[in-house]
Image 1: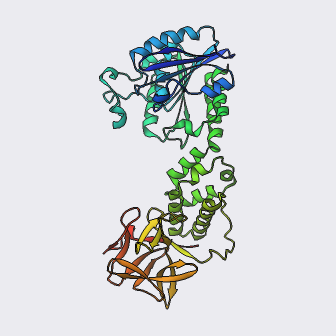
Image 2 (image 1 turned 180 degrees about the horizontal axis):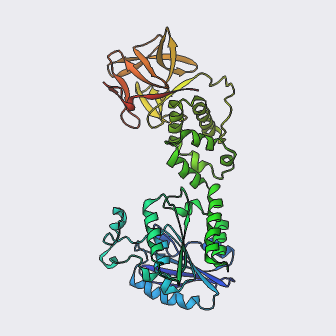
Image 3 (image 1 turned 45 degrees about the vertical axis):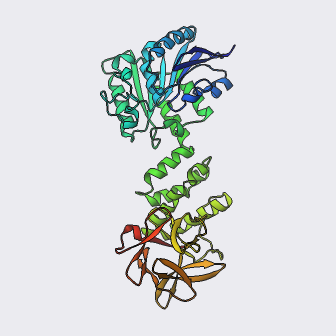
Amino acid sequence: MNDQIIFDSEDIVVHFHKGNSDFLVITFIGIGHEESAYTLYFGEPVFRKHDVSCIGITTKKRNWYYSPNMIKALEIIWRYCAGYRKTIAFGLSAGAYAAIKYSMLLKTDVTIALAPQLSIDDRETAVIPEWAALCTPAMRGMGIKREDISGDIFILYDRHHAADRHVAETILSYTLGRSDTLVGLVNVPSAGHIVYESLKGSQNLMAMIETAQSGRPARERQALLARQTCAFRRQNAVNVYNRIRAGFERHPLLTWQLLASRRFAEVRKMDTILNDETVFYRLAALLNNRGYTHQARSLLRAMICYHATGTFLLSSLKDDPFIEGRSIFLDHRGRTLGYSLKRRQFTSSNIVWMEGDAAPVGSIEYDGVVYPTVSYFGKSFFLEKQENIISLRTTPGNLSVVKQGKRGSIRAEDGTFVSIVEDFVSGWARECLSYETFSWVLL
């Protein structure tokens, strides 16, 4: 029988797939998969497809594989390791912790650890409260120690993730003065803690396993893993999204240039990136506010086209008789200022499918004054404030647009300003603060 469960307890489950490879892969899945401990282990479909011998370790509890039952499981796993030329451990997050923690007991030759954790015992190291709360009294002292590590250990992590960098550097320090083990650090930029999301793919996984089990010197394998992960993440939608999310506020023009590049056009599963429309509308507002009007307009048009047709393309702003010259107001979150005819109020929503019956608010200049307007069936209407009700008029009302460069605010005759106070609710403020100032974009 090629697939079987070789160990089962109240918390630890061990799967075994007997393949034709002369090496054995031992995997530890991360937390969050406890309900599928019997049916899913990390790498299962890939190793079955490529007929690679694999032991998949799962847990029914969020115990970081730190359990008396784990010691019993390791004894059985050790017997299954006999006869293989090389054993390779592979783990993600909590699973990466376990892969390193038990490398000495398993005598694994190579460990690939993606963003490992050192411990969730806050008496040992700094831990976020959510993880520290999962540390039971029986798990105290669970941290990876110097005497736990063995073999060649390659840690793949995002160097800008402070907690993961601390873990990687701490484990690296355990090798000082030792010749029996090696720790190689591989930076995966913009990956965050969930490193595998930037590297995943069956071919990518097999490539890393092939590198790990090869006969190359350890430092050559470390360098090759660095080159491989660089290639994997370049076309990975999650990695590209992480880069955009992390940098668009500081570098809006560079982000726009990335979106306009051929490289971005070749990214697979682009919808993973573009479906977070708030990021891109905020980017459009930032571009417009900093004077990059062309880029802001092209991005908004591209997003409108993407949501309508599924095609995203930053074009050269060719004349479009159906949209040319129409203005919109983007609030501090990149949401579009709208007007609800049913509620007779301003609102804030998505530029393409606005909340309820809302229509985007635009503007018209008349006799030297800029007025906010809405358009219904091709006709523009002015807006009038009457106490707390906003009504429509065919002639200029008592609301006007106060422009401040590329930004603007909507002011009433009583000196108050439109303010977006909740996701879909507007109010009025006495002072014009950042929350009452909108990016005025002419499409």
